[in-house]
Length: 261
Image (cartoon, one colour):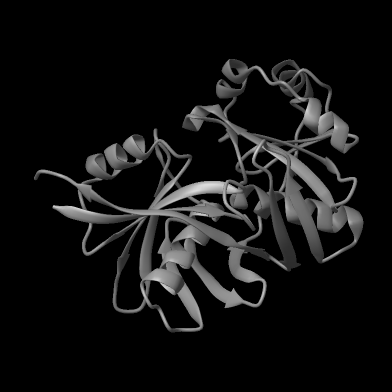
């Protein structure tokens, strides 16, 4: 059996920026353990698999360790593959996922992904986060992840976490964030529980961050930068209980997976 494989850099304007993702279009679903092995072999933060149905594309995301409920950058990557490489001619792609229907449109500035906005709850786990991050948060919130709010961009850059302690926390991961020097806000995202110590650019995290910073700054449109080594820029538009995340994608490779079955 041969499967096409695309590797692209999502939330990037040039090669080797943003977050690499693998995209594997399928004619029909393979066994889950084989999907997981392919993701593990790719050894990227996410591999996206999709199958076309009558009205949707069914989309799933796998880290090297687990299937996840939502992944922004791999959704961006899958949309790019469909629009650019597989000849999808519609205005918008409707993905059926574990977190509901996600709609992605091609725009003048890239691809706009309409995602559910996270509902944040203030948390008192400051001591645990401080011990794991090595810094006392100014405030802390939780949704899918813990969000540690720091004073400034320099503090975000300086964070050197204890990944073992982070992996022992009960939520998916930990995001550190602060006002940016040149952007509305900046962040870094840590997911050691998923086998990804620091994610280069995390779309799903901005479903949590954009509502927080939109409310704090009194803005519906925000520009964010994730301060990983690769860096990446995410345009965020908060619209009620939805967040539209917009970014670009750069191609890296196209290949073929050969599997004996």
